[in-house]
Length: 313
Image 1 (cartoon, one colour):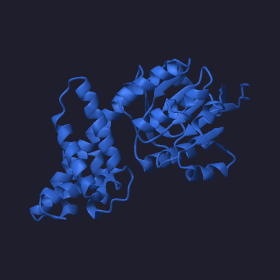
Image 2 (image 1 turned 135 degrees about the vertical axis):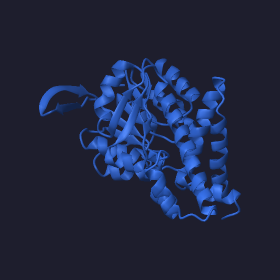
Image 3 (image 1 turned 60 degrees about the vertical axis):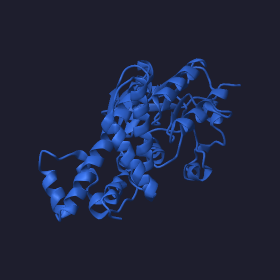
Image 4 (image 1 turned 90 degrees about the vertical axis):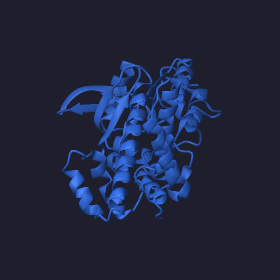
């Protein structure tokens, strides 16, 4: 297969030319997070081609002149840096090593940047399979929900080859406020799972306290105002104030996705023989909220599980 032409992407820092990156960039996964991330990349760099399992979500980018591929392997036969942002372990592994996956037509030297939040086991399997093709797989999940992605203010946590990190860092800067290099492969994903476990625990604890206050006849808005200026203040209280106050759970981060991430963290802990009792209880509360119909709403709808066990709808 002939080598495709390579685009030259120029980087300017402080208005001075510092160098250039030679790459053809591909992007896979045009979902709630992938879409704004891709738009931020496009503000500075050209993207050669994209793929999404639901073709319609790609059409708006096709209208911008970006090649929309029918299969993942077409991305890897045309691009040497590929960002992947899909839902879970199964989707990630299917995209990378499935029947029509990236590895079936990949060019040696390609870098796959997997931003998906998946299990540590799946990530390690991906890394090994990609290495067999003389290519590089790195994990680079992001912290932040859709509004952060839209503003280009995500936190990117990178695990893997340091040279690959330096190569892709300029692209990360287009959608990240903070970028951390975590060392060996898997470390970025470990940090993301730790973060989402703690995030879920924090929000569950806050929800329990708010329902407690409701049952004691207290005004929820006043309770939240006092918590916000106390030692019990937290970032999650600020971020989820309006959804929790109004119980209007427009999704920024799906409750079902939070369940997935907590369970990946619990799996990682079990494999390492680490006990996470609060994590187990937190998983049960989110699963309860999902079982009563809130799984595809924002994760703040976990408060409904606390209301339900106290006899409220």
